[in-house]
Image (tube, rainbow, N blue to C red; front, side, top):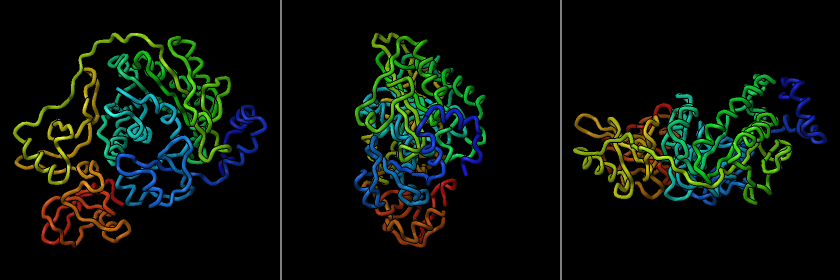
Length: 448
């Protein structure tokens, strides 16, 4: 039981916060969890996937979000195909709040594992450029992998906010700060949050969150918008951090979110513009968010911008021919080379000099000595109906199950060499057709 392992000090504080709702909150800790998923609008539509997976309960403030009860879809072929991202329903709140302002250069500052970054991509205006940052290299790898599964071409960086701030002053039009926190809103989901809870940890988190927010503030352009969020409940890490920030940064104001978000969230404690979700009053876990705007004015920072890439030269024809054979329209995408890898990158990729790039885009091709070899991203970038060299099986077929386990398939195909296996037409990954067999090129780390 969650309640048996929680500190009495925590219960005292939450009782003072919630008053008459305290007992409802305590009961919610023992109630079944309500999981969620968010449709990848790049690859399908909410209506199409809702019909296929029998999704009947939408998240009220996210047009592509659904509650899924206790159902688990992590091993479903559509998940491997990047048709959706499994995301806690409450965690969809921050991006939904800032969605009307997602344009230009966008930063997801604390991005791993990638739920909010993939949500940003579905919400941002055409021509925008997203950088997803994660300070821990191993978590940056997970972030990059999730972006790859969803077919995203956005850039990933691995930097401390304080270091990034020095390189990118006034560079971004919108910033998402989903700050590391004590996780009080996730007690039903994460045992570690219960084990690690203490007043000292709450105060330590608040101090770190404040510093992260200050760094983000300096990276935001005049007139830009920023959303701050946590998955915790106390006022120290939430309203307290925002109020302290606004006292120091007079060029910022807290602003109301759009009507849909406001209608489906509660107001903050002592900060009316803030948004609150509690597990006893919302079918999800606990969350906090507050939308902030930087005062209008001139942004006069001059940048030396760069890309870490080198242009394709002698190998360009070979690379383009290969990608075209798979179904990628090379005339409509920007391809760049870094070391021995070819990436599809955002059309307007250009960043301040000195920014350390973990991954510049979606890796689609490896250039070897005298040949080229496709990478998994070449399959994830494609949508249903775009694959040319392909072999298709029903989603629930044994062939799809065996493929996701990494097994070789005994199947004749109308093509030889590399192609793409699809489930109900949705691209899953690469295969190589050789003498009546399909050699499996699904990445080992993703196999069932």
